Amino acid sequence: MDLRIPRRRARVAFPVMPSPTTITPRPSANARSAFLRGAARVLDLGGALSPRAGKLSGSAADGAALRSDWVAVGNDFRAAMDRVASEDVEATAANDRR
Image 1 (cartoon, one colour):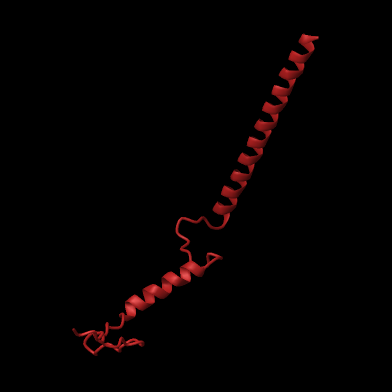
Image 2 (cartoon, rainbow, N blue to C red):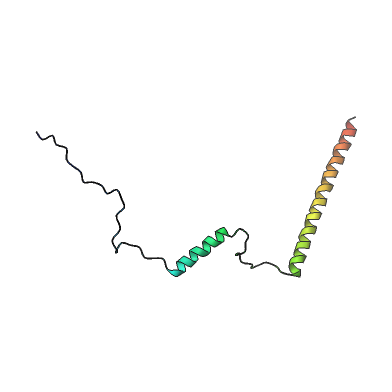
């Protein structure tokens, strides 16, 4: 009876360099520049690289900002008047219960 343990081939502990035919080609200049533009947009926290399409400029932007401010003021007044009206109703109801 043969009690010898069969030997296995030694495994390579370091990566084997691929042959020149299996090396992937370098990305084209267009792909590299697209990647770099995408990375720059991710890191652009201030929005300096964002397109300005649809943005108003000059007096049109000032007018839109003023209108927006006055709309906010009107909304605040309406909310305050609704709150005062509901407090008056509650106060009247409390007086009627006495």
